Image 1 (cartoon, rainbow, N blue to C red):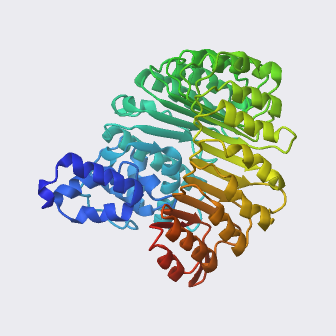
Image 2 (image 1 turned 135 degrees about the vertical axis):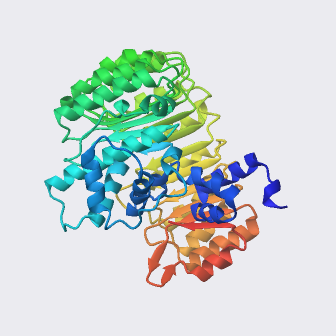
Length: 521
């Protein structure tokens, strides 16, 4: 079928899928014809910084600068800087497209870093001095203004303090901000130890200004704030209060009193579905009282948090059953008894659980609680702190209906009991489809026995060991896939040794006859 007969909507979905999985192929689609080019360019330039995976390209900034030719700038200093650098720039011709208008994700952190790289390449000085830092900050600001003025629909925005010399700017005052920023769905704010009082003031103005422009933010993420950033509280509270349908709230490394935020979060109680806490200390029961009243909450995450005392957690334990779908509990100071009580109060709704197991006499009781009170659980990611007790931990899981299981060995000593490893396969749930074994040691015979003992329909297998899989390991897995018939995906720790690799390319190619997708990391 000729490409001109493919509906626009179908092509768009194909290009979006390529954008997520195969960017090089998507780029090649630019060359097919003008119609495809006009469809692909907006997708490629919607998140251009992210697509480079933190490999700053001066050409990306040069393209934006080229788009700014013929623009009139009120700031004559910026024009002077561009003219000084023009002799070193790779191109002064205007691009075919105004790429700025396609941008959907604006990350000021990335923009500043890329500008720094571009300036350093085009600058005649070998090292940047204070005057150069001022110029880099100005260029970042002017390109940001250009993007905001021309982009008609920015969906995501990330604001953070990048360099000591960079200044946080209230971008809601930029021309076109009212139109461009009114469509924001996600905002991420990151503080820093070297934030000046003026940075805090401008960031607070930005948050308050954004609250007047955009009321449809669904995702707010806040990172790294301390007592010296107290002035930001009012701005953050104002922003949260102004939203109509906030769905996700993430807060990390928050060294401020959390209580003032609670009333603003309560204003979103009917829409909040995901809440994540990282490196937070809870000094009272206020946050847990709030969580117990979030009846639409589907995902709750606590990582590296302190303050899980019974008097604090009691409200969420004694509340009516919480209807969570996903629960993450890792590296907190929660006791086994409180953990068990919390799991019991998730009656029947939990489908996804990530848990750091602890070496106590309650370990087996925790697993029994999971099996009994979480009958609909399909995904379990558990860190095993005492690998020697792995069989007693797995035994209750045999009765579960798990489809995805990740066993992450984080014990202080390597697990090298090949006899026990061989038996693990007998304890896996018969419903299991995806299995991840992270940092478990095994020899060839124990791996073979382990796979022979598996009576579940494994479709995906993740095996990570320090030395990686060799050709012999891969051959055993290939034989299993050949006889089993269900294994379609294998992921492992890949090791490169000059022109050679472990496992070898020949072994991988042979295995792909029976395992379609093989990926090394």
